[in-house]
Every structure is written in structure tokens, then in C-alpha cells.
Length: 414
Ligand SMILES: Cc1cc2nc3c(=O)[nH]c(=O)nc-3n(C[C@H](O)[C@H](O)[C@H](O)COP(=O)(O)OP(=O)(O)OC[C@H]3O[C@@H](n4cnc5c(N)ncnc54)[C@H](O)[C@@H]3O)c2cc1C
Image (cartoon, rainbow, N blue to C red):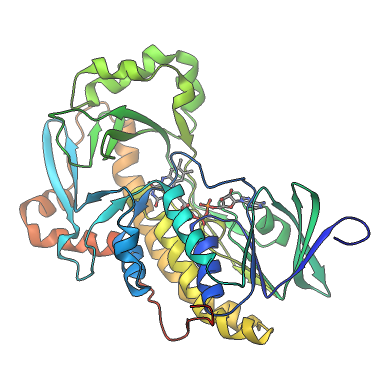
């Protein structure tokens, strides 16, 4: 602590946000011998209904790091296929089981387990420091270069001085706003209400989405419960809550694959969480001494459940480029531009595909009064199993998948 009682840290890299992007970047940098301080505003990683979909691309990274078996000891459900239901007919659309990776499926795992795992691994490296209950508030700049962050922790003001600040503080990023860098918003026709229903004997085990006129329900198999996503028109949340729980349940009823009796488990709206869907991307992800990654750089639509995995991929790409310059204590703007160049393309292509699905399938289903017809693509995937490998590759591995390379050398503590 200094005379004015601020806590001051001097480090190689300050990371704001201990989500998937921030913790993966911190872990890989610390493993490569870089000193990092992570600022996380919450006191722990316990947040319900966040992205719980760990895709084959992320599982493959775990394998490359030598931690896959240990990781898969954590409770999870394997999702090797995805299906869609239109009326009473179910169509098989994605098959991950043929991907040439160690774990060809989505592992459904609570995000806090994933984050605790990354944090535990990172704690093994002496350069890693996580400050929880500490909110990044302000960028510190000198002569147009970001030189650190001012934050507020449980004991008061915290100053972190570093040649690079990574903003991994999510879709409502404070530091992005502080940076003055611009964000392009692409809009979304829907929001999502998340809630749980118990999974009972005879329910089946398939993760699927059901589209009916005016409504969509997605049900993710989470072992002893279903994680349900009720897709509603953008901004309809307040009206629906105003109409009351009975109306909400009435709307859900025709979409359920089991008796409506189970809706009694939803006792009030407190157990129904709203995800306000955003799709946006920064025009430029960096300025001298500063770089945004993950949702802070590009909030993804929930279509395909790829948000966590893109955030992790950004972290790997960033750590690969940054490890050596950060060890040397100087990060050029060319390096920051190269990271953006590498990751903006996958984010852009993935968002384009998500927007296509949002505008052509979801928007149509939500505004339709008549039965929703499965698009030709869905019918083709169902008829020709080989074709299901295409969406599996795009969703499961993503565009331009990252790997743990030589650039990410093991640190002295490994
Ligand atoms: C309700 C919901 C459901 C979702 N479902 C899915 C899904 O099924 N599949 C999927 O892949 N994605 C899903 N997502 C999106 C997914 O959670 C994100 O894409 C992913 O977590 C992005 O990771 P990130 O690390 O970039 O940001 P985040 O996960 O948002 O992490 C940001 C972190 O920064 C912290 N933070 C924020 N501001 C500050 C600050 N000023 N100072 C310090 N810390 C700060 C936050 O507490 C958080 O821990 C969902 C999101 C929500 C909200």
C-alpha cells in the first residue's frame, strides 16, 4: 500500500475480467513466464445460466495442454449430436462424433467449474495473481498509451501498472467504453429466457430445439435437469413478466415433450433469467497498450452456443502473440493489430452465420402464425448423415481453430 492507501501492483499484463477469455489468457501467459494480474469484480465464479457449452475446440486445447482426462473428471454431460423439432417431426442436424479430435462432442459443464479449473491450473504459476471482488473502473493513460488500470477492491483503490491491459470484461465492458473505441451493433430479433426443469425417467436424453408458430424452446440435457431456453421476440421480456407466470406457462405448454405438470417447478419469475441477446463487434480491438478480447470485442448471438469457445480461442491467439513481447516488456501496436487480424475473421464469419439463422429461421418462427416449415438445409442434414459433419465442424471447431504452439512455451514453474 502507498501513502494514500491505494494498493499498487506492477506487472507485465493486467487482465480485466475473470471469465473464459480472461482466465485462459492469464493461464497461458503465466505458464509462459509472464506476470499477470487478473481483476474480477465478483467474489467467485458462481454465476448461473452462463455459457455452459464446452465445444470440441476447447476440449482439444485441454488435450494439448495435457489436462483433458482431469478436466473430464468434472461433472458434465456429453452432447454428440444436435436435433431440431418442427411440429411433431424431429430432424437430426449436427453430428460431432466424426470430428478428428480427442473429445468429439460438446461437454455441458457449469461455467464456474470450467473457470475454477482454469484458475486452479493457473495458481501453479508464480506469475499469476487473481484479485477477486475487484472492479476495473478506469484506464490509466500516459501520452496516448494505456499504462494500467484503476480499480476498486475490498480494501479500497487498486492501481495496476502494466505495459499491456487486456479487456476481457465481457459484453458490457467498462474498459472498452473507457477506451473510446467504437463498436458496431448488428442487432438481434430475440432475447432468451433461461430456466430449469427436472429431467425424469423416460424423458430421453437428446439436446434439441423445438420451433412452433410464435415460439421456440431449446432444451439442453444437464443430467438431472433440463436447462431450457425460451426464445422470445426482442424486448418482449417485460410484457411477458407483466402478464404473469400463468401466461408464461401457458405459452410454454405446447412446446414441452412431457406433461405440463412439471411447470409447477417454476414457482416465480426469480428463477427465470433473461439473456438480452446482442451481436456486435469492435471496429478496432486495440490502441497502444490496450487490447479487447472475447465478448468485450465481439458479443456473440447464442445461436450455436459458441460464445465461450470463441472467447477461449481469442485468448489462445492473444497469448501466442503476446508471450514473448510481454516477457521482454514491450508490446508493439503491430502485435496488437496482428491479434485482431487473426481473430476478427472468425468472429465476423461466425456472426454472419448467426445473423443468417436469426433472420431466416428464428425471426420467421417468432412472427409466424402458421406451422414453421423446416428449411431445406435442415431437411438435407436429416436425410444425408454425412452432411451433418459440416455444421459439426463449424460449430464444434470454429473457423481458424487455435492450438497450443511452441510460442506458448512452458514456464519455469511447470
Ligand atoms: C444468460 C447467458 C447464457 C449464455 N449461454 C451461452 C451458451 O449456452 N453457450 C455459449 O457459448 N455462450 C453463452 N453465453 C455467452 C457466454 O457466456 C459468453 O460468450 C462468454 O462467457 C464470453 O466470455 P468472456 O470471458 O469474453 O466474457 P464473460 O464471460 O462475460 O466474462 C467477463 C468477466 O468479467 C467480469 N467483469 C465485468 N466487468 C468487470 C470489471 N469492470 N472489472 C472486473 N471484472 C469485470 C465479469 O464478472 C466476468 O467474470 C451466454 C451468456 C449469458 C449472459
